[in-house]
Length: 101
Image (cartoon, rainbow, N blue to C red; front, side):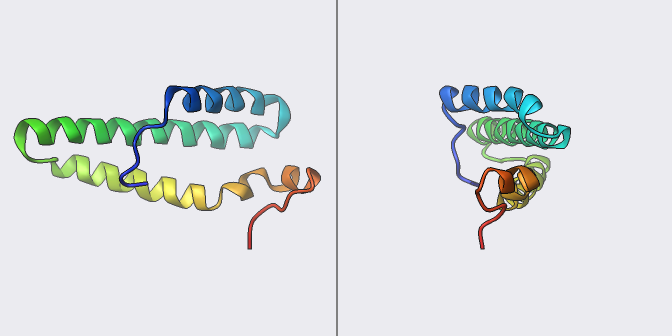
């Protein structure tokens, strides 16, 4: 993910549609967690964009940007690793395992 490009507009739009639908399909915490995932993903890609521009103009990423990217990357990696747990009981009701072993 550290070298990932920002998702295509279609993928982003589909995520936002699913985010909106989650308000009606799942308990409120699922929507809240997905919304936080969206916000932090946007922050991550915005930081990467700023870093690219700064490097192209100055030859330096800026330590504060590196630290911010690292914090976003750690949070996103941890959250994506446990994403199936977000749906908990709802995943069990669907017949799908709540998490992969």
